[in-house]
Image (cartoon, rainbow, N blue to C red; front, side, top):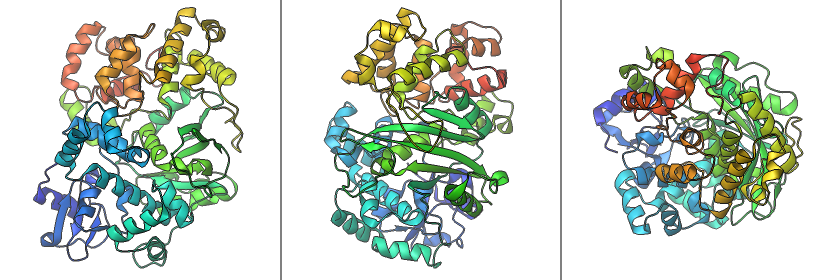
Length: 541
């Protein structure tokens, strides 16, 4: 993406948070690259080089700043990308796709050849897919060295490296430091204030950053109303959930052994996510050691608009890269809310940028479970759908034991539900036709014919969903909005949206919403929120 040098330098001198993650600045006098919000002394413009991504800065010989920590910068939402294929590939790589597969395998999953994918990524980002993957691995490793006390060997495997030797070589080549030296430099006060080790008991404690504003109340209220009993729990701005992830091909034999399990095909564990804005930074987060760790971390960020603190069970460390990507998607942390709001103001959806207030589109940690929930919620209230989903998880989800009293089950897998019969699911309290829709969805996902992950081909996935019995346009777009992270998804036949637009037809609403592209999903979230602060967006959500 071409960058205007003068505009970038103005944003740098202003330390404008809206550009955090949009570009990075390399300082030629120090050979270090920073975020535009870095608090270090502003360099001369003649000493600045600007890059659209961290990988490009590292390829040009710059190492990441220890003060502003580029690995914490928010990413760019898919709508910011000029090349759809390159964006889909970049999203997959950021989630660790090349940690376990080759570029050709990734290209095949995206429906193109390896040569075409390489050309698209280089043309859009200026680096190869391998360069991009190496940057993501190293930045995650740097983050773990900063924020945790994990041994260097575990850091290497958690960041996706196949061996400690390759990790050390890549680290020294890119950063001109060994991992141990960077950890010492990061904690001796030379470049950055000392960091707390991070883990609380057996858990890992990390932070996630975002571009403000963030309408946290509506985000957590949405998740709370739909939290599946046993597998999810939301209270007081804190979201907790059990997690099942595919196991990496190579797992460190001496790695994490906390709660959860690693069985060669899946890794299970749990996460707890909490927003600690400046006004709540000193509020008591939890009891015991974990509470002290969270409060200590919050106090270091008291001057920021807000910090997301995430506590991760140590069993999930081998799959940390895809997990962090899912957590960012869950809270829509890579959105640029002011850009979206200004567009929707011009389109007449929002009266002002302030009124939009940083509305986000809640994602999910499990695309299949969300799709099942969308089907179960058809023509019933949100509360009713939550009840039925809880029954399904209680009967068909595996047991899970941890210190969090509300987390007792894992979401059932597509493979597990695909083996059931209509009566097994209908007995939970739903019509047989709806049970058949759940079974058809489970079999499509289990067979590999349907992918419900961020970055999947939206048009193809919507066609596949609507071809299944019992899944119509509304359900398909709702799934695309939350599971696929498609910011232009729009359920035009939603009753609340049609009422908000003046009791018009779905066809009329779809035509009106054309001017809301490419952020129709955000328009829908805003209208749902403003239509009623207590009612659900739709009886089927």
